[in-house]
Image 1 (cartoon, helix red, strand yellow):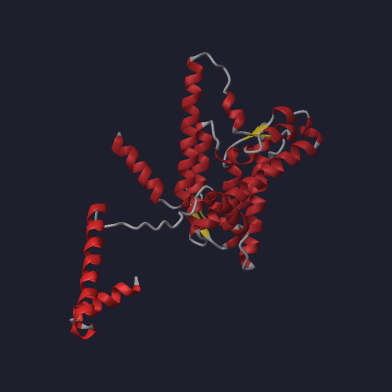
Image 2 (cartoon, one colour; image 1 turned 60 degrees about the vertical axis):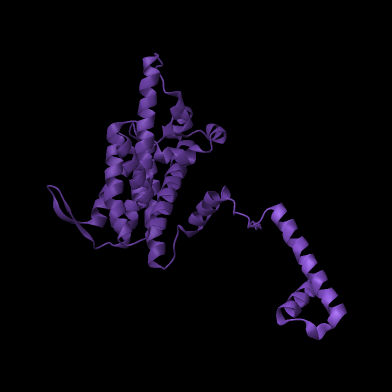
Length: 292
């Protein structure tokens, strides 16, 4: 068990950003399910901690839980929900990394999540159809972030072809557009919030691709902000200079006393026989002493 945990830590530490994103999502999912089982053992019928991770549609609730705009995109409760999200993230994340770098993948994951959150909150507070549902509607899952990555690589490499099981060869952009159509048709379904968030993530991915084709990195500013927060708690070590004496106080005092006696003897010799009587070593010691 200890080796298994060590291997997980090592693969997370040395893995790329795609591996880290999957680990974070899966790790949080396992923690949530374990806590829910524990609560049920004590007859707790609801899962109150999820409210502190899900994104509320209500602007008033969001003011009290602003961090949920980030936490929601890593939060899953149903097994199939996280399974399909992570499979899509793994497949299309790998395709994305064949054209872009890890920082852009991490940045787009966040931007896609923010775009999905924006469309979700805007729709539920703007359209009359959703207004009666605002106070008890919440959003969670990595779907919007994943859609941003899917649409980014699909629109950046529009002629790229993939092989689909039972379907065969198909252009990547057709698969992306098919999912977009499904989401548009399902924005009034039971999972309306999820489909609306998908659309927001998809549009962010298309915007990223168009900017990339123009030579611009849409994630650059966000990545600088993330770097600032990451480095905020890291203090630069102050340079500390220490002086280490290689002798004890007793040895130091004895040496200084001997040096004084030697200089006094040299001075007495000069008085008796003159400076010319000094040896080269004595002249050097007298010169060094005069500089101190």
